[in-house]
Amino acid sequence: MSSSGRWDLSVSIHATVNGDRTSSRRTYLNLNKHGMGSRYERLLKLEERAHAKAIELTREQVAMAGA
Image (tube, rainbow, N blue to C red):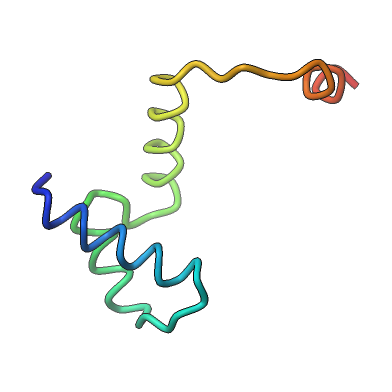
């Protein structure tokens, strides 16, 4: 993935999160370009990142997960 490609995707996401208007076509073009066009592909990418990074849970989170 090129650095400019990551920039395109991060700009689309950042604009959406901040309430700026970005066309859905542009967003999906960027998602498809990075292999995340479907929800399933995005879920796989999210799981991949979650497995790569250890997540520390608080006692409250552990208690909620066990409830």
